[in-house]
Image (cartoon, rainbow, N blue to C red; front, side):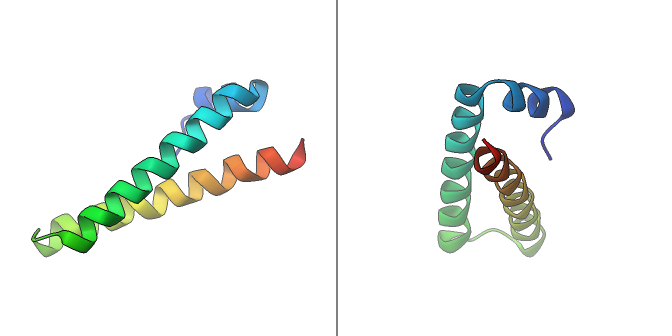
Length: 69
């Protein structure tokens, strides 16, 4: 989840929000590639999938902020 300070900064500054969106999209893409190619054990894959889900929720919040402007 996005911490409250980062969320507030994203609300105030569109450039910061766009950078955060770009970073989250890249992180999600890289994580999904790791999952697809992975030889990790089940616990590690579950952890990584949970992190991807959290990042997608954060991304949706930021997309909503963009839509409201």
